[in-house]
Length: 209
Image (cartoon, rainbow, N blue to C red; front, side, top):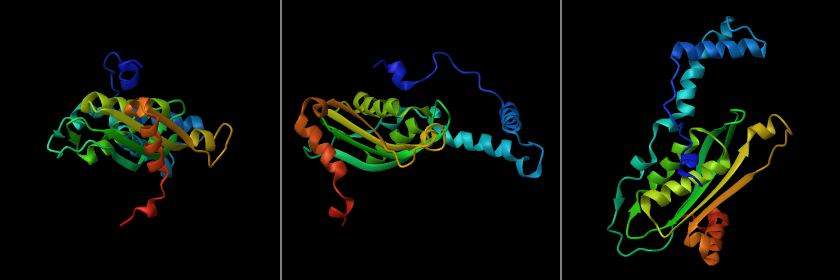
């Protein structure tokens, strides 16, 4: 998959509207929905929405290369799987701007260096906090780890619920969408891939301290 597609960054810089223009757009949508933007309960909604958008879509300002820039080579010869399970995330569907949310499971096989585990969670947020589709987000996370850590293999699984499916359209709730991306040894070695999936599915209370 092309790197530009994975990054989903515009080919040229986007002319960002002013906050005043963004708030005016929110007022227009409120009126289009059938409500009165000037009534008391909605007077401050445009400001709140634009502020919320700066949080929802903070990932556009984050560079995965910076997040994964620092690695640690003193790992005592450790070469087995490093895994983070159940990284919670929330994102927004780029087709309807409706929320989707769930968990990400990440594993990689280090080749001489590891990264701080919190950095992997930050990589998830860097891509989740953008307008997204789950399939692309899954591939982006895996590719970023592969590009910047140069491991022997990467595995990513994303499990999510999509409100664009539960609150509109077919209106089916309790449906989980699962996507995976395997690179390197996780793709070529069925045993390693099965081990990753088994670790994802192992009940948490079986290893709780």
